[in-house]
Length: 124
Figure 1 (tube, rainbow, N blue to C red):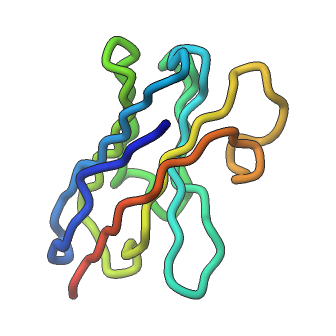
Figure 2 (cartoon, one colour; figure 1 turned 180 degrees about the horizontal axis):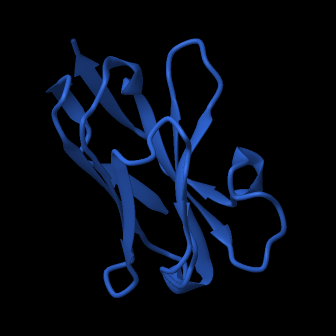
């Protein structure tokens, strides 16, 4: 089970930190990703971090503003979002994919488990 928290309403230029707590799985065996979905749009990749906490990848739209991190001891992945823009408004989802599963980590279909999502709204 994945449970996100930390969403909310923030003004443009502000910051939020999302958390995703995992349970029922061996967290360190999973690559973790963040996706988002705005109304009427497809779910899109935001960022992922490999199981070891090493390699990290970001969508171009968030590069330099968002930072993903994970704490394997706490079974939690985070998304620090700075310099937020109105176009960042969406429901944000965390997702987990078993480390030995094939598939691009930027593709939602590669992931085994999803959270319920947390709403992020950025006002202009």
